[in-house]
Length: 284
Ligand SMILES: Cc1cc2nc3c(=O)[nH]c(=O)nc-3n(C[C@H](O)[C@H](O)[C@H](O)COP(=O)(O)OP(=O)(O)OC[C@H]3O[C@@H](n4cnc5c(N)ncnc54)[C@H](O)[C@@H]3O)c2cc1C
Image (cartoon, rainbow, N blue to C red; front, top):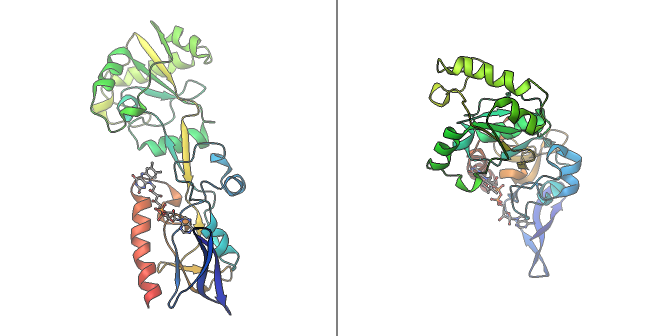
């Protein structure tokens, strides 16, 4: 495990590491490529830089302890987008698309057929982590029986009721809020459209009783997306703006393409695309 970088003047020429408890020094003839993952498992770094996911489960591995960023910073490396995070939302999309997601005021806030990571970001960042899935019995049964890659994220209803008014009261939502949301949704759903938020017509059906709601409050986790600032050739940049000689980085220890909005695949894409460029740059 790498502990720190070794420099000769301003050039990175190796690493100090521990191998089974013993100290080892490794000389790098051409350069060092840092690819040690994010800081999702470093509570202090998360609290300081990405507090919105502090205390939430990290969708990551413990080796993502931020060390690559810290040993780069110790040499004056710059960072970017340290507050950016992916936010996983733990609910089966087969259920979500067949219902409506509402916040703590009983209002819809996102199309239910969008990428779940976007739902996670919208829920945690803009809705105070308050989310409920309102769904009718027929849609719930259909969703539970549908083929799913996220079947382990299926959930039992938290509340059931014969009318929306009763459901709203059981859930503790402001009186009339969920009723008006369902009324508006159903008014357009009878024509198979969702002009308010743009859910695709294939998922839009009026919600009719009996009604259920699944409590999705707190069902978010995530990992960090910010890190060392690099060039497109994966050179790590000093705060002065110049590359640090001999130091390269790729993957989640850098700030990659997905800092502005996460989608599955962008992490592995970042790692492989910029990892290759880091290797080429170091070899040159
Ligand atoms: C459950 C789950 C599902 C995911 N699904 C997707 C997906 O569908 N698509 C997608 O693109 N991404 C996905 N991701 C995210 C993606 O897997 C990671 O963001 C990506 O693997 C990060 O790549 P990396 O090279 O930066 O780090 P890693 O692949 O974690 O590699 C870093 C390596 O460095 C090692 N290391 C750490 N510190 C040291 C040290 N000091 N010395 C030596 N070695 C060290 C670690 O042990 C690890 O082997 C998922 C992640 C999780 C947890």
